[in-house]
Image (cartoon, rainbow, N blue to C red):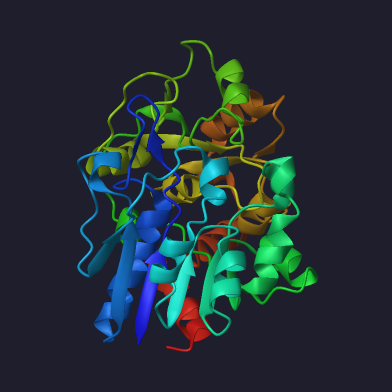
Length: 338
């Protein structure tokens, strides 16, 4: 069977205006899925931008790579709506197309009525640009299957008539392997900073703008202008060095990097939202607001995992294991009927 994977390329170096494919969570996820599909004998194609639009380090993808034959829009809004008919006809020449583009199912369905389109839903429409809100349900209804990053998102999509399934891919299994590193970073903010402030990085900066605690913002897109280059090994080590990880993203999922840090052993402090409660349970004592995040983080630093009951820790650990690539692939493979 011929299967084409088309990530969204959401991570960019803001200083150089280049896509960072090596650390893009969506690219890493689809590269993993590609390897699983190849292993069982499927013909896989993987879509990437032209090399001139990307930083030099790219993930190794052992399958046919289709380079997009035009300049990919750097603006997330423009890229969501960049529907080139001639290009859609090329990528639509497949049995199954998996994509993280939120609206691409709509034009593809018009061109290929019988194509099996599998798309990702990673955010709620109300966290996107207002002018695109009406596009979400149109795309969901055009898709054959929508893989959602959380139960909350799957419920929302189902209520709009979409065929929703939950694929909780979040972290590569190797991240849980101990590194025997000192936990010398008090508080980690691993989410991306952006012009829309969707991860609430400004609230984090306001709360931790002093030298009392050792804090770290990975800032993989260089949005803050720090010219920070974290290679994959150094990034993983940063996760393993952190005592507390803070998640403040309110978009229907909460972020891959937050889960990666927890898998590496950091104690989670999270915004009190349904998506974080889904992962951490309603009983989690380190849920916060934007106003008291510093206070809750200091509490987590003082008490950490050890103060929590065994039952609670086991439940969160089980929820987290369901977010590992290997565990989530079990559901994905079944839903894809492969």
